[in-house]
Length: 351
Ligand code: DOR
Ligand code: ZN
Image (cartoon, rainbow, N blue to C red):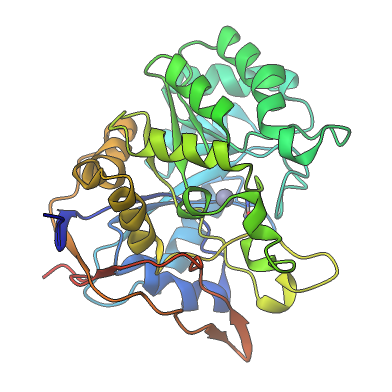
């Protein structure tokens, strides 16, 4: 008999974009009512590079957490060519930074100030390794000669493998992985390496981006790959391997910025992510592995306590497309795949 409902410890989101100002105010409640904590990405404009900027951003987030929610934002440092390792150490020791984020320069939204040459960052890597502070990596080569669908696999060979050799004790989270090569890299590495997996990369392959026409709301970076890569991600996520855990990469953009000549990368999935993940685990007959992926492996890797509250999802009719989120007249589209999702969150707010 298949399950009709499932309760798991309250999950955390180990990769989240909240933005700022009116978008922050509009999207934060969807995350805060479901997830206990979230690793908040620092790719604002200007980027969150210093502990001081992170404290200010954290205060702006905390001011908007809905009453009754005990959501905790965990802040990250945006690495640039000029990052001072002492700034990382101070922010880490003061409990302000939970991780550092490496964007190859130009890799994605607001990544212009990212790293131009990873080989020049030794003082930063030495500090991260010494502190055991996690390094979160957007893993795509910025060599524009490389086909966009190969950029993750090439990054592993060109950058990640040499980096691991030079800093074997550095703790790395390979973010939003999209390929069989990334799964294999993480599986083969020791306990210092983990990866996050998004709901959309578990549900979409690259055909979906072009099905019956161009689908800008399925466009994100790294871009979804071939079906066999999606299959590998599903196997990894549902395997029970503690190296793989939940990170939505929920990344809101106004529909006008996505449906444009040069559309932005990002899928906004905060409200639907838990339904989608549960659907995937159900389809893979692995609902018994959902709590590990969503609620245990992440805090274990970050050396943080697991959440004690629970959430419950029930299987019922097909989830309907949630309404766009209104931002001062602008809109944000919420992610839902075309394939049916049957799981509904019922205990959203811990009692
Ligand atoms: O699709 C993406 N959107 N990928 C990223 O890495 C960044 C994100 C964003 O900030 O919009
Ligand atoms: Zn992201």
